[in-house]
Amino acid sequence: MYYKNIEGHFNFEKVYDKVLSETQNGDILVEIGTYLGKSTCYMAERVKEMGLKVVYHTIDTFAPDPGMDMSRRRKRAIIAEGGDIYNSFLENMRKANVLGLIIVHRMRSTDAATLFADDSLSFVFIDGAHIYESVKEDIKVWYPKVKVGSLFGGHDYGNRIPTGVDRAVPERFGSDFEVIENSWIHRRK
Image 1 (cartoon, rainbow, N blue to C red):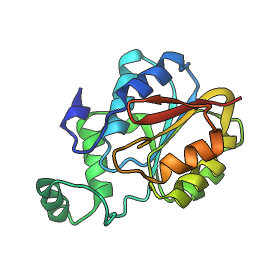
Image 2 (tube, rainbow, N blue to C red; image 1 turned 45 degrees about the vertical axis):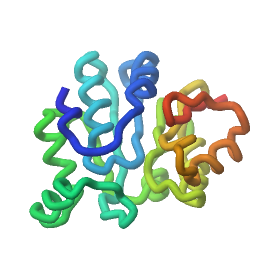
Image 3 (cartoon, rainbow, N blue to C red; image 1 turned 135 degrees about the vertical axis):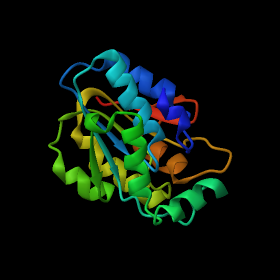
């Protein structure tokens, strides 16, 4: 699978596999925060491999984040490509032959949420900004979009260095979520 060739931190294959085990043709899936597309590629490659007919949206501003942890090699490559993370993302999806399986929204997560009706999504995964206010706002605007009975989750819960995720998730869901690796997942009731 090509996703292994893409730079980035991605350790939530088990979460995506759990989601895909419940996914049906016609479902709409959303990933917030894509960076260079490692997790996006994994999901798209698995959808393709499984022969699923889903609509898979990915949302990111693709703006450089001063706090972003990138290798020097990747920073040099992005600078050589004009400093555009978006073009690097698109090139990765082309190389993986999955660009036609995703709909890319180059915008803020909270703005993108207005594009979707309430109770219309089969899965939303939040991995954008990790500060408390951003995570809290993403949960607030995206949770109503998820169908009752469907999964809603995100990344970077319980890291060695606490993030806003560690505060926002239990504040909203209490203990009604599961931790897989360092991702959280909740089933909408």
